[in-house]
Amino acid sequence: MERRFNAYLRGERSTALFSIGWGALSAAAAAWAYLHWQGELFWALLFTVCLLSLVQLRAGIRRLVKARSLSKELHSIVEIAPPTFAALELPRLDKQEQSLMRRRFIEQALFVMGLCFALAGGFGISGQSLLGTGIGLCIQMAILLIITLTSQWRATLYRNEIERERGP
Image (spheres, rainbow, N blue to C red):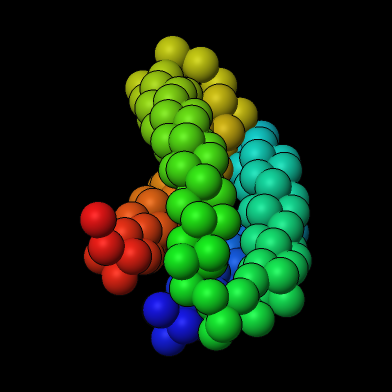
């Protein structure tokens, strides 16, 4: 169980670092694009991507801190008393699963909203700023959705491993 716990924490840390890196990289790319091709489209893209990059940076930093605190809190317990570890970890995973489901729903809704904005701007129903906002929302929400889905997948595998080792 200790090996699985450490693998889970490594996965959380790598996801956090990816989120931080993507947030910084996408904001820098949007700023570079705006500096080279100024206009309503790139201003809206810059604004949307930078705001969502702040969300990604915050989420990544929060995930790193959470992984570190989990490691300090539960590492000694997983070595000594695996049943106690399972009793502590399963309720936390239940709460995390509910949180990830809510987050996934919100990200899917924002992705669809960004798609609608991009289509409205692309077909000339609205201005270029709506197109830029839609493109920014779609790109950032797609990445956030991938991060959330991989987190759900990792948590489910981890939960199944704990339940299997704990027994009936």
